[in-house]
Image (cartoon, rainbow, N blue to C red; front, side, top):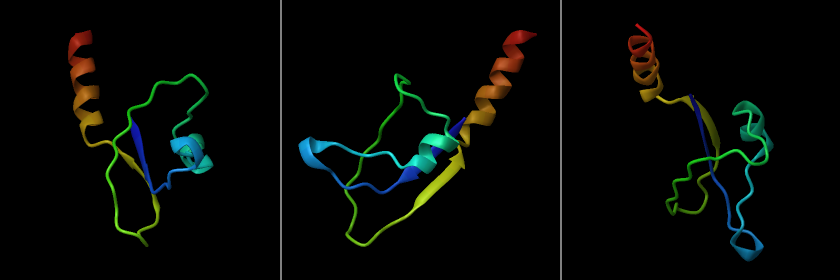
Amino acid sequence: MLTGTFIAQLKEKNRIEIPAEILTKLDLKEGDKIEVSLKRIRPGKLGIRIARNPLSKLLELAREREKR
C-alpha cells in the first residue's frame, strides 16, 4: 500500500488539488475512495513524498496467514 504526502493550499470554495505525480504514483482515478488527514503547517514548507506505509507489510502478512 503506497501513501503520498504533499503540501496544498486551499483554493476557491475550499478545494484542494491533488498533484498529478500523486495521482499517477498511487494510480488514483475518479470515484476512488481515499483517506485524508489534515494538519496546518508553517508557511514556506514545501514538498511531495511518496512512501510505502509501514503497516502494509503487516497487512500483507495477515492476509497470507488467512489464506492458510
